[in-house]
Image (cartoon, rainbow, N blue to C red; front, top):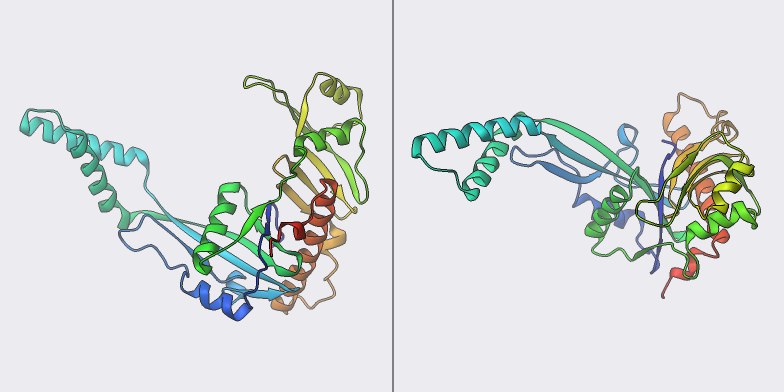
Length: 307
């Protein structure tokens, strides 16, 4: 349940839906298995998976949601071979080339015929809405998956006024580069031992370093050669680590034992109580982390509210 990759957004208008209202709106867009003619379906599933019975789970003044996507998997090679066979048969019988329109129709018919026998691939994307912090946080491996999560929530509610958090006067990669040059990180952050550097230009080299002292002469050499930081490993409060990207997303988020063991006194037989406590703990830590990070970029979530 511990989030591993983060994309976060600020609301531009207060999020005023109650848990009961959210449940009602999400129910109209609940996940159901693909029909025989559907290649993909995307909808809401139980917020806590097998442990839950609701689409919305409230904890720590936040709402946990889980979106499920089902894709029917049809190997492209199978479609290609069947299409070639149909095209060859038509051209032999009618002594002419198949038209583009005929090929497209053949392909559509082939896909429809294979869908009922196709394997399903299920993938879940979990996130939470935190009205008190004016945040929506999505555990997703790519921005497109996070955007899909937001799009489904927007479709369910009819509106979802959110914005990415981006500094206005300075690019994130400039700030991250300055951390290694002459403006060290403040407060609860410490540099890790991993970074990725780019240079200006389409064909510029990409430099990746791991297990490296980021204050070393080698790193200074890259910076002197006008390389700039696009990914940087950080630690926060000796509690967790992550790789910060220049779009302010988090990769490879790892909670240290000092966090994960805080709820070990809860009876393991009481699965829901343990899950509830862990989510409350995680959300509290992540919200504090995000606010601490945003301050490094002179940002705050409240400034995005327009009313």
